[in-house]
Length: 422
Ligand SMILES: *Cc1c(COP(=O)(O)O)cnc(C)c1O
Image (tube, rainbow, N blue to C red; front, side, top):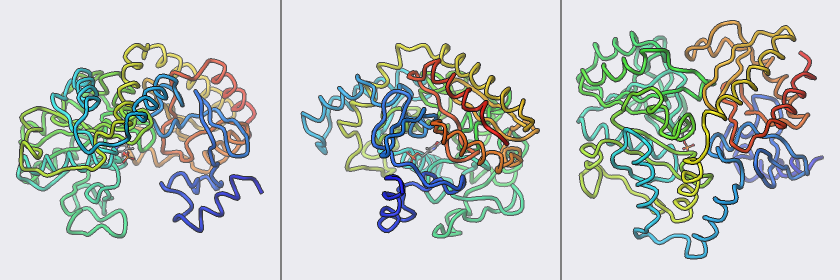
């Protein structure tokens, strides 16, 4: 038995499913998880001493690569001065300033400790601000695990949603309305039916949790217009896209300014950080300047702020276009290799993100993403992992590249793909 397997067996007696976040268990790819002992640059090293080229990058945060020396140093310096104060500190102001300067829609920002906290708090603020209850989200959109966002559709988009998990009361998700990504008509229909009680539309401006799905021209513009017309807030969940698709996020690329923006992942540089921000006029409704309550014992934690700040300072100097182009050529080559083996492939790509879907249909929303063949993905995943290539263990995830990925990493990955047999 490998050390990873031994640890997994022990973990399974102590932690539900042996993991602290479900997808890590690798169940859908019929594998046991690898236990990671260390990470550096573009690679992970397992407890068994196998080194793999990583395309998960902690699910997005590690855009600079693992264990970046500047980030590690910033954390060490902060740690030497005390790990938590429960009182304001300089680094919070500096990270807030960096975020406000970078993200067009953020004039004021509140730090929290995860993406889940960011979206949950942004929704509370939107509800408190508009004095309405409803929220529109999209099928296949993931916004963390707060109750309001764990709804899946009943028989159709206009029907009331049903909870996506036991433990979420129907009473809570009855305010969650579901629309189809890239389909403004489904959003418009919900506004026409219930517009006076819709507080917000929450959307990943580039969807990253049904695999990668890009917004079609006019989609984000349409959301901006509809929310404006009905007095609802537009919330961009940029937990994946913030500081990844561009330094200012997806809103900078597409030129659409939301009312509220949620951040996470990259702004923590690998430590637990989330943030939500927006127009001053709206953000000032948060306690203690306003009445909408939200708090956190470890919010603005000095280690986390130091890691985030060092990450943003480093990213500000790097060439996003170059990484985007390298990721594009690499993923295109990967697509060609798979096609040459006679399997159907659709490639979606932006910046340092891509997904190869094993389907013939263009993937533009959750239902087209679901046409992807999961048996082909499982086989691909397993054969790549054996050869030292670490992909996300689900066909509905993005592959993440980083500034630490070299052309040699890409070449090795392509060589491994050439050896895959379907
Ligand atoms: C990861 C993610 C979240 C949740 O963030 P956590 O830090 O895991 O709570 C929210 N929204 C999006 C778009 C995400 O990808």
